[in-house]
Structures are given as C-alpha cells and as structure tokens.
Image (cartoon, rainbow, N blue to C red; front, top):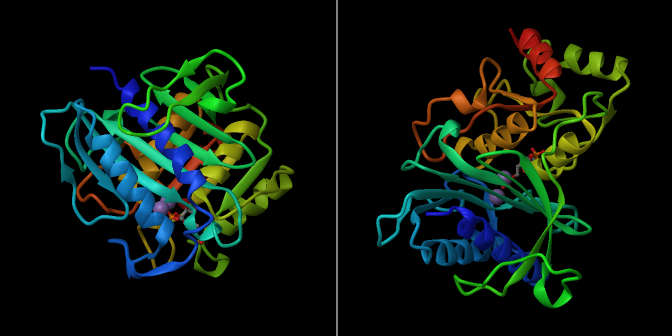
Length: 300
Ligand code: AHG
Ligand code: MN
Ligand code: MN
C-alpha cells in the first residue's frame, strides 16, 4: 500500500495545526515521556496526528514524542509512524519557526532509521513547506490550504478528516550544497564534549556563520538549503544528548543522507544506531559529509 496517504495526512494535519497554534501557547501541568514541559499545542497536535494517522488502513501503529507508549491501530497496517507533533515548541511563545517531524517505518517501533520508508518534516516558517524523502530523492513542497491554492497540482483528499491541502513541489532531487555556509550547535558551550569547541572554531575559520534557532528542523532546513552542519551533541551531563532517535534523529538523518550529506551519533551513521527504546535519545550531527568526518575525528 502507498505511503503517500501517510505523507498527505501529515501535510493536511500540519496545516490545520498551524491554524490552531495562536490559542494554545500556554503550558499544561503535564510533561512528556522525556520529561519536557508540554504546551497545550503539543498535546492538541499529538491528538490530531494520532486520530488522522490511525484512520489510515496502511498505518499499523502510531508513536509520538508526547506519549509513553506506541498506539496500535486496529488493522494490519504496514507502516509504523513516529511523529514529533511540534518540534521546537518552546519557539511558540517567542513566535519563532517550528514544525512537525515524521517517519513512516516498515517495521514495528522502536525501529532503526534504515527502515524508514518516508521521512521528513513540515516547517512552519514564513510559509509552510514540507521536505520529504520517500524511497528516492528529497523533495520540497509548499503546503497551502486548497482554497488558497494557486495552481493545479497535488491536492490531498482530506481522507482522515482533515481539510484538503495543495502539496506543490517547488524543489526536486534536492542535494546539500557543496560549499557549507551555516552551522548550529545545541547545548551550552561549557557542557560540550572536549574538542567540540575547537571544531567550532575551525568552522569559524572556514567562514561559516552561526545560525541556531532552537527548533531542530528549522536549523536542519537551513543546513539542507545552504550547506553546513547542525548538531545537538552529547553533553557532559547528558551523554545521549537531548534529541530522540525515533522522532528526530532518524528522520533528519534519513533526509540529509538522501540529499548527499552525512549523519553521525559521534561514531556512526544515526541510521545504524540500534533502536532499543521508543524514547531513547541520541547525539545528532548532520550536514556536509566532510564536516561530519571532521566532527567525528574531533570527538574521537
Ligand atoms: P521539542 O520542542 O520537540 O522538544 O524539540 C526541541 C528540541 C529541538 O527542536 C531543538 O534543536 C532543541 O530542542 C533545542 O534545545 P535547546 O532549547 O536546549 O537549545
Ligand atoms: Mn523535537
Ligand atoms: Mn516536540
């Protein structure tokens, strides 16, 4: 069965989520399984994605950063979908870019990144774009509510209960630019592993510009667009870093490696990291292959 319906449903739901953010900027009492505070928007977006994705026959289960356990569908669906319903949700109060990260795996979760059939993100920036790699090259789409659509192109059908949106391809077979321009490294400098700081100094010597905005997919989208490196590394007090393998590390590694870049947990491709637990964290480094090689040498 086609995974395209999953991608369409992510697109429709992300456009609807964007429309509902303004009134959901307050924190709930709760926290997610990783111990992060939860915004109203996190919880609401998660419930929409669960409802819409599990309504698809080909979806066997749903897992989210906001829920402790995998939710089984009622059929025998082939795809097991992991979603970060709002990545960078702390940017909502400051009205900075944020988005949705997703991966449809062809095996039950937790699953290694090499089992991703379709993965990517929806970036809620000045415009709404979707970047996805589905067994082939990376494509960027502009997403618009169908009534604003400006040209006949792929219209989703609102199958799961969402409103149809236009998913218009604007860049195809995307590859990461050879000459890197930007870098963004998470965590506090005193908490970085030894030698990471000297690696960053070498980036500055190479005239790369610091671009770090607090939402992984906004920062990774800049690296895909302009070339460079994004990392949320292992920290002295958090040896597994902050980002989650199923919902963040694997999807961005899938896209960046498909676009001719590289990923690393510090030692190997993130896509080769063994998946043991749904909410396991992983140090994330993605970008141009030569920069990732240099970074691995520095961390060695
Ligand atoms: P989420 O909002 O899904 O928890 O993700 C936030 C993550 C990631 O998007 C970003 O790169 C990182 O947290 C930012 O962490 P800092 O606030 O420590 O910079
Ligand atoms: Mn996130
Ligand atoms: Mn999130």
